[in-house]
Length: 128
Image (tube, rainbow, N blue to C red):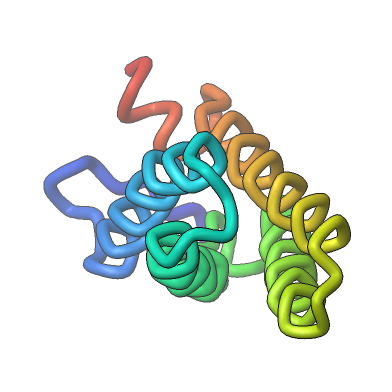
């Protein structure tokens, strides 16, 4: 069953997902641009990681045809990469942490671009 929601009829989970994803996009850029290793970097990074976990997790409740799609594979990869990045920094593996976090942010951008395709809900909202 194909679900085509207008902006006004979208389920709450769609709005939660959209909010945390957009907030992650902005905050992630701030974290990546700012100086690393500072208390502010760690605080903002923790908030960003929590938002990313929420964005990836909420995506599993958003399904176009009552089944998972390619974008859900990105969500699984995102959860693994983010978890590994946090594991790495706790072990003092800064380079691994950096690569994983940059990759996770790139994945967020990729997922965002994918959702803007004309046949996807957000693409229909944005481009009509």
